[in-house]
Image 1 (tube, one colour):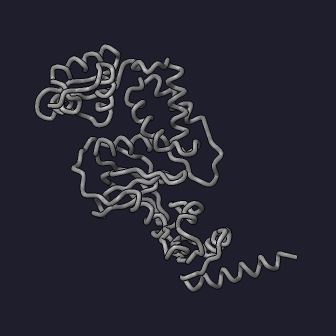
Image 2 (cartoon, one colour):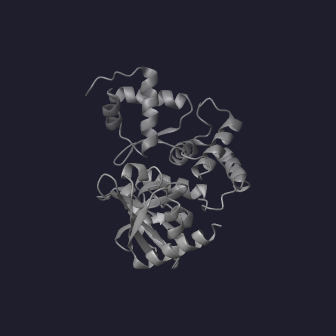
Image 3 (cartoon, helix red, strand yellow):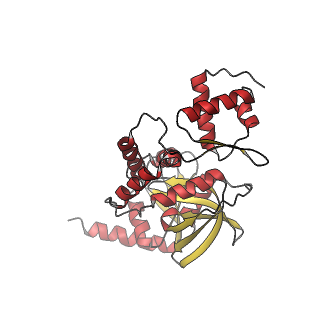
Amino acid sequence: MATSTLGPTARILRLLDLLQSRPTWSGTELAERLGVTTRSVRRDVERLRGLGYPVRAEHGAGGGYQLGMGRRLPPLLLDDEEAVAVAVCLRLAAGGTVEGLGEAAVRTLAKLDQVLPARLRSQVEAIHRSTVTLDSLTPSVDATVLLTVARAVRDTERISFSYSAPRGRSERRAEPYRMVATGRRWYLLAYDLEREDWRTFRLDRMTVVRSGGWRFRPREAPDAAEYVRRAITRSGYEHVARVRIAAPRSDVEQVVPASVGILTAAGRQHTILEAGGHDLRWIALHLGALPWDFEVLEPPELVDVVRELGARLARATP
């Protein structure tokens, strides 16, 4: 066992972080992570309890230390009103109203929600239900769905949910692996138990998400970000366009987000863009807005649409 280089305060904070990272830890596992004896772990657990953190100890097979729901909010230097304000702000940020904070907000909210007393949680729910945001471009994600999925990913628990897709609504059972945020939209990479394959799900299309406590052994999974990126730029679209852009990939990726299309370098001065869409006219319009020349590779129908759009724009100029 390695000797701990952490002081008592730093060690307690590290212990708290470990307890929040997964449902159950054995005393031996915690001792190894902290570089101390199991007796020191027991003492540090008692210190956390004295500070108000509800750490439970289960004996026997499958037991260990667990961080449970608390009767009072642990000393985060927040009073009740401040805790409610933080939770509400995190929910808004998780929903995409604060650019760039979505993923961090969900992780933080999952930790705060774990110890937030029921009386404060109901206040947060009431405020969140009575708040709307002006965002007509991106469907909102219910904060409860975000939290339920985030906890299931963390705890490796199966989930069931209703899913609305263009082909209709269906009931799904899955093993959640990772959540991926792209722009202001959230996706879940999960193993679909009915289809026995990996699938991506948009969280704004998921409702009645349930986690019944059924744990699963993680499978060998694809790279979540890459899988979702390819799925959302190719799958489910009537048309997939391929164009050659007269600019290096390093320049193009500054303008074209990863959620829009797949970029592949074609030499030093050109880039291949693959992007899907339901309407060729919209694809042509977005391509025309790029600051570089481009050549349509496929589909052939897109060539005619681009020509038509070019002619219309030319007629609009006196």
